[in-house]
Structure formats: structure tokens, C-alpha cells
Length: 223
Image (cartoon, rainbow, N blue to C red; front, side, top):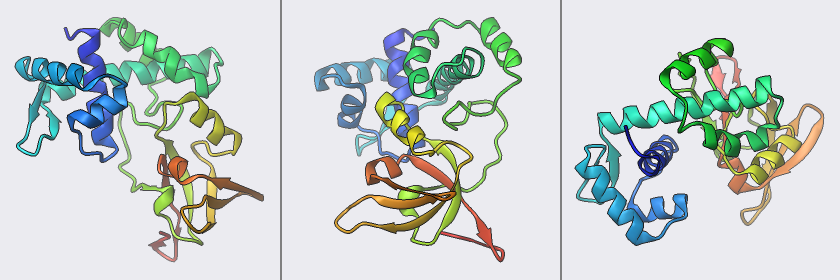
């Protein structure tokens, strides 16, 4: 059974890879908020325990055992978020931090009961897939990659920061929202969107964390 410290590293590596980020020691230090020597020591430990391999380019990759351990943790975390929001009524912006306290202590039996009680959800409240749940493999693109005039449905908010989650929720950018890209301000300015009849502006850093399913017109996806 991995220790809590090991689980945190495996979770970070898994999520960074899922976002398409090349995982190296410096990136992990930044993501976890720890010192570089601590990361170096933990990566050595993860390698010795068979959870990761490191390539010649210093990229860190999960082994099958590492991926399995990470998916168990993330599945329990995202089920916990569902419990907090769907059953207990907690705001989705606060659910992540609270779920972090649950994910390390949930047993397989509790996990199975929790999934059943929640009617086997396929995503967390923010739209991130729950490992092991059936998915639809629909093509998703980052909001920041859509051109002006594109329309799509927001599917996922790749964010864990309470302030960012509260910010996008206030703008109406929640899974299921239909949006249209009006345009981009110059010099890396914000993205202008229409959500229904509401016009909002989203910073590029936030737009990078929003995954959208482009709507199809005349058989062709808008992108």
C-alpha cells in the first residue's frame, strides 16, 4: 500500500500527463509546492518501488503499477467530490480541498458503496473523468484553442484551485454550458464569450483549463 506522500506524487504525475504536460522534476516541484531536493529523493524512491521510470530526457512516466495506484486515488477523490456536492450540497469550488482529506482513507468496500450510492457517476462535479467509469471518448479541445466564431459545449474544468473554480462558476462556465467565442483581445488579452445572451470575458490562463466539445455544423466541427 503506497504511503500518503507517494500517493500525492503519483496523483500529480498522472494529472500532469493527462493535461499533456511533460513531467520532469522541476514541474513536479512546482505542482506540489515542494523543494527540488525533496522531489529528487522521492523520485528515487518511486523508481525503487517500481512506480515510475525516468527516460534519458528526464521525463517521468508511470509504470503500470504506478498508473493503477494513481487511478485508485483519483477515483476515490472524484467520488468524494460527488458525495460532497451531490449529497451534502457543498459548493463545487470547495469540494476539491475537502475531498483531498477523504481520498487517502477510503477502503475498497467504502469506494464500492459510495459509487453505488451515487449511481455510478462517470465524472467529478468539474467534468473530469472518474478512472474506471465508462467514457464516450468525445473529442475535446481547450477553449484557448478555439477561433473566433466557434461554438461548443463546456465539458471539463481542469482546475483544483478554489479561487479559479469560483471564478469560472460565477461566469456560468460549468459543464454543459453552451458558449460561443466572440474574439480575443490583443496582446494576450482575455477571451470574449457569449453564454446564452450573456457576454463574459475569460483570462487566457483560465481558458487553458477549460475543455470544450466543439459543436458540429453541416457535418463539420467548429474549431
